Amino acid sequence: MTTTTISYGRFKRQDARMQKLHLSQPFTTLLHSIIREYATYCHGSYSVKIEKIMPSDMRLLLSYIVDSEDYEKCSTDYSYLLALFEENKKFIEEQIDEQSHVVYCEDMEEMGMQMLRHPNNDECYWIRR
Image (cartoon, rainbow, N blue to C red):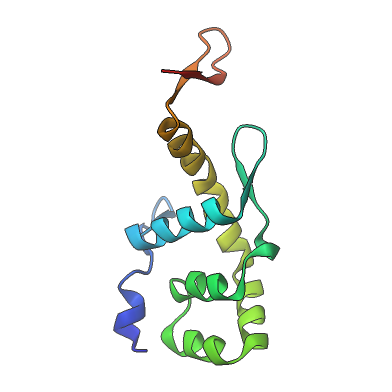
């Protein structure tokens, strides 16, 4: 695999002053798929246990984060894959946590629910449309 193949979907740092990450659309779509596959419902959102992610999905996630040489090596060496995933675990968990509520809201809206906010305490709740 070449560097250009991998870097097409990689995330980019667009606002260095605010240190805000803007994820690429393919990476965001992958995160949403991972969340839908591995998530469990937890207090009005989804929760994903990183440890339960399959090696093939680990490789997919790492393909957006690491360079092509590391990706090639983790494709052939399982222990290297686990070490590389562990090294990037915190970043992956942060991205999944950020996207979990978004995916939960999309799923609820798809089921015909509408989110409202309570006027007094700004608490969110769902009702059928």
